[in-house]
Image (tube, rainbow, N blue to C red; front, top):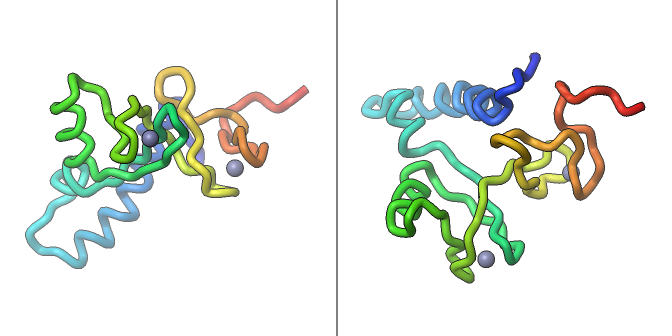
Length: 119
Ligand SMILES: [Zn+2]
Ligand SMILES: [Zn+2]
């Protein structure tokens, strides 16, 4: 499957299609849109290096309480969204406009299929 340049959205959408489908099957009262807004998991890493996961609803509430900044539940440092590396599972900080990096900073796996081949 090709991952478009809006990688964050693409990855999230792909994950949601899979997760949302399973979730949907198990819950009559929750539609895919509600899943996207409330149940979808978002990964964050704080400036002190703590990783944590919030649901979409939790991250929205967290940001609303803190002027749009997600604060780490452990140390209250500002946190930014991250994406789990498919190879080593560590959370990679996003780059640019919310895109996953070309290469995992931890295990050096090539994680962005859209990245130009190394020369
Ligand atoms: Zn922290
Ligand atoms: Zn990795």
